[in-house]
Length: 327
Image 1 (cartoon, rainbow, N blue to C red):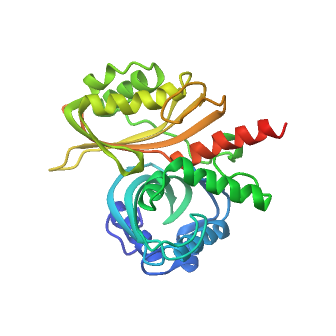
Image 2: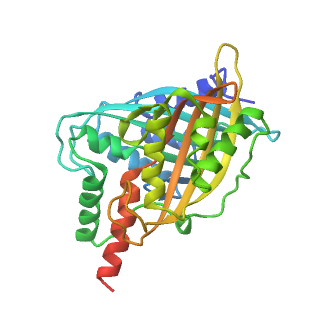
Image 3: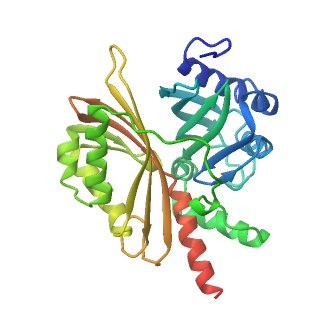
């Protein structure tokens, strides 16, 4: 596997991220490392060109010119054809000094977790799936996910453009075939996810999680133990009681002196018919794009990073309400 100047796949992922952002390679490095017809699916929307990725990068840097991307982990899988899929967990650390989609610059520090899955061929990202915790953006800016989503929705309505978010109807056919690694830890984690998020059996929490597990939730919250995780899960499930879980891909890395690390890309599809984490029910159809990294020991989750974009969920709810009001 040719990784150019980089020795390992994690080195490559961390390195090209630094080249694009901190080292200010931006468009030139994106042309080098991203395919011209890249398929980038983010919870915020779909992008089908290198030019679109460059435009979004420039907009982000205008709002946060000192943005640092602190790499936390890369969980990856090689394939026989020389390609690989990486799942990169990182935290953005940056100061909001430029006006943009997040509103007028406030000068506040923002920290937000991201997980990005990249399918790479010949040192070039061909497809990417990305979830950014915009609820953490809102919290750091002194607001909340619902309020930020309402502000974004109102701006897009004033501009006469579609309310932006990602649902499968926006997608283009993938050239990547999703895979599930056959591993005991991964299977234990996936069974627990299915019981909890598909079957709505919160008793699964006691079986899947260590009693003192740390659960990094959207909004930058860190929850501890079975009771905290149960409360969080009920908030989502009560909002979408018909939610259907789909596991998109799963991979495992077992490295010396580390816990077993599992990365899962998943989705929840449901209808906003109940009172829960997302407020008064509206009947909105909702697609939640999710990414999770779990550190496991003896098939128990010790630490989990559960990333969704609650701002984009709220925007789907508001889009439904707006369409109903205009009918």
